[in-house]
Length: 370
Image (cartoon, rainbow, N blue to C red; front, side, top):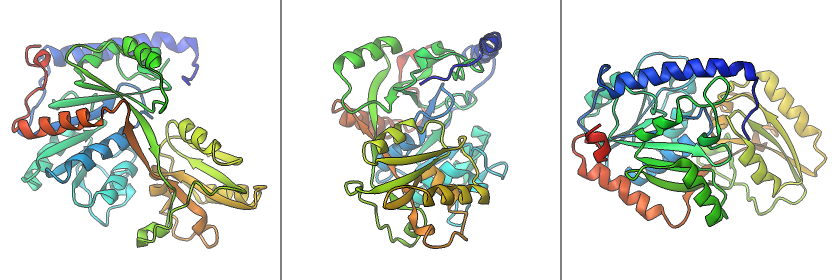
């Protein structure tokens, strides 16, 4: 659901739109130059602030490409406590590179993961340090106009589509809807598995994609919960979601939109207490105490703490959590599932782009001649 905000913010959103439209005009007209690189660059982003599923889709692309090409991921590293360019190492922490890049680097140890708020500098450093790099995936880079990607993937949440939103600060849009024309692929994420053909047609009409754009629907694929701490020792000991009788959970989230996860868990657990924090929340000792207090007061015979994969990265910093509480923390890995049997088409589109574009050529005729 979209948050209702004060109507007094609406004039500010008009001003914000004027500023962002002017900036985009300067890039589109060539007054402000944009840099292209000599290798394929795939951008995964949105025009909606937060919670569209960029990280799972980025991980999908990594999984698709890593066995065929040398993959690098370039991110801003939101809320990290370092500055400038940082390359992810095995010893890197979330303070060094941010929670999402840390998560990606741990799940895909054979790829290059780097963070830099300056995407041009970041890409140059990656290519200079890793000349074998065959493709750069730019996470959350749709508004970074200074670097021109060869393929842009734009995400919008089924539950809060960009077409029904408003510009910041009255709404959640980072830029006006007409700027979706920069995307080569539009993905409506977090769609229900049983979405009807009528619902798809309605949303497709709202999106009003151009002829050169491809439109796909994806859903969230929740996997069995994994221990937050023990999996670092390769002892995954997954929690079987099919066996949840007499279990209660404390759901701890620090993500932009935890509602789909909450709804998923409600179908499996009779007792859920939800502790909701702001996106990228850095947990404190007081938070852990509050979690433990709520857990002890659950009415169910057995209680567990569930969280998201991104939150687990920040919770792992608490090395002093004692047993039995420590072993009760689980995170739920998520993936994406392409609906309508579109997976093969999407996969081929991505692989063919990377394979054919030795240089960072634009994929659509519209962009070559704009």
